[in-house]
Length: 277
Image 1 (tube, rainbow, N blue to C red):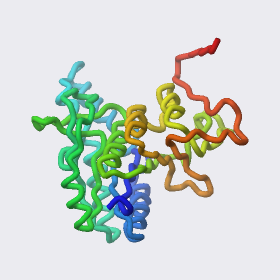
Image 2: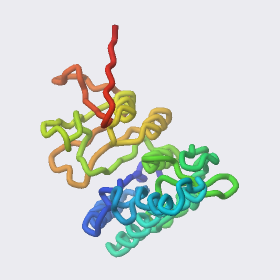
Image 3: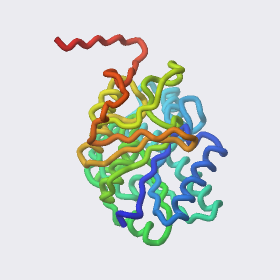
């Protein structure tokens, strides 16, 4: 199974409309028809303001109460991934690829009881193996799990990345591919810096520092889990053209042709100065 199974995670911006959804489906079906067995993890569709984005669901609760209960917020926030997984599974079926949408609970993602920021304790992969062996593509709701007592939990902001890494580790794979709206990690935010260049290789610690300091490419906890389980992360997009993806792993870049500064990140409204004396 290890040589055939691949984990794909699709971010919300890659699923935000019917055209994007079809592009994702076609990419997954190509992998499937080539003999691979994709395990797909999805985020909620779109971003804040879009109908099924997580922040949109949160705003509905806060319009009613200034302090919604954490348990009920988790149930509400998990809806976005359920919509994404269901629609992508339907799209895959329409393209002729057998697929099944599954919640975090259904695939055995067991967490602690920290609603809103739960930690994965275990992944029970019996159901996933059964689905794969039946020739079906599992489309998993990222960002969510279940406690030992059956309560739904969410993993915190960017938690779908954590789900993807946890699934790769549980299936004993050596990598997971994260599809975003950019073909590779850049030296700066390309929306702010037009000349930002792609970075093709990063060490876990480098991307961890970038993520903590404001780079919104991958969740820091996902990087920490990947580093602990020795899972390589490949960051790419469906429209990468001639741009190679970014690979995150245990090896440092050779530095050949690169400057001392690898990348610049930012958090709006905060200035940080770090001196090595």
